[in-house]
Image (cartoon, rainbow, N blue to C red; front, side, top):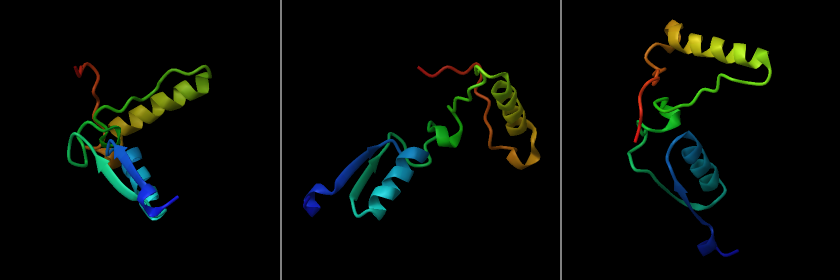
Length: 92
């Protein structure tokens, strides 16, 4: 593979997109990352606006842990202002 072939386009600059871009760049690729918004995008899951937290599992222990985690995100002082509860919001 020639150097001209070592290019990659990342679409989406959330946490996964930017982490992937960083890894590709470290591996010697020329990286272009694009997003509809400037990072940090208010719509990316990494900014916790549209993050989906799964609360239902086959194992009851996992469901209990997910409910506990949500409560911690909502109520722990160290997480104040980070978690945004989007229940009831609809994005078209």
